[in-house]
Image 1 (spheres, one colour):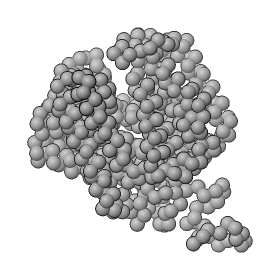
Image 2 (image 1 turned 60 degrees about the horizontal axis):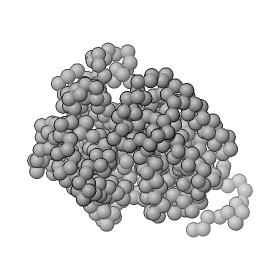
Image 3 (image 1 turned 180 degrees about the horizontal axis):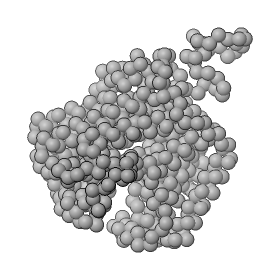
Image 4 (image 1 turned 90 degrees about the vertical axis):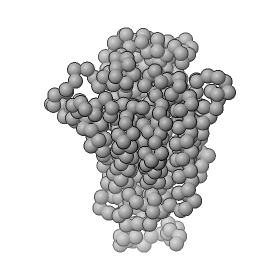
Length: 499
């Protein structure tokens, strides 16, 4: 049985009417070679070990006042959490063949695995409830993988836009967004240290700008990453500089550190794809573990907490521990029943937004917005069942992601969805879809030109995304359909596929 992550055009398995292979869900682990499975397990254990020691010896001592407390894990419960984490890693796609594969591994590293592991050694939940939470998160991740693998044949209409028109339109939209921002808030071009971002955020928030929460994320989560990626994979400096400069300006104006750090994140992602003939998921996890350990060691040597606070605490620890915090705060309280998203006609039981309730009870500051991932938001709305509901919705949205990416290089489409995926670590699927650029990224991906990318990237580690069926050539049916069809005229010998 072929691996779901096989390169485009190598799978000869007959597809079911829905589009997925007959046992698509299980091909990740049934097709594992022992060495590949061992590498995946080793990377997962390395990640768990680095995260544990970084949390115990660096994060918790410095930030226990903000709810990041530590307790020794109970061996039995922690073993269950480790097994659950390893199980998810083995079920996830082995190799990155589609953008949805990349997104699942990024979500696993930034929100999933931390939410399984960290509650075991933080004092937020009782040990048994921490294990229950971890198992629910693990089950939700497996559900995302299951639904994403059962992709239909086609879910999006084809959007044909010429390359010239696309880039002109993208530049025009950027100009309008920057003009709108300048008109209402102005630009700040002075250097902004990370220690001063909170003042910049306060100044930006004090000037209410209509609809800026919907408009600006499209620029820094979608449009600028598209320009940066275009510059990297077309080997042109102008698109890269345009996108990177835009991220810097938005960071200096709004104080959003993640926007500035996205430049480095996209560069590292491009390097991962370029350095691997076939990028595998365990390499992403191993890189995250190396970054955690490296941040810890650098801070130990320099006597600071800069890198641990900037990378480990912000992007890994907080998404994990806030899932446990939402369980602790709303365990014995009324659930919201998706009254702020799916079922807006239902009454919201809380006069104050849930993020501020958790901020007051967990952090001790009623002004802190404790934005949580889709797992914590799912629990807020419907308990543990809510986690699976949001996971199922994300799994179906990944159908649209893969369909929009059809015919494009996998590295390009994966990096296009990098920022919306990172946003899932601190937002519900509904919030990220509407206000963090997820839906906009799908539309942009569907319109992205299929020409102008570095051909060497497509040939080595940057395969064209197969999505539903690999694109052989324009107006040419897929290979499996071609074999079943009766040709009306003999094929030219030159086009015969070698057997």
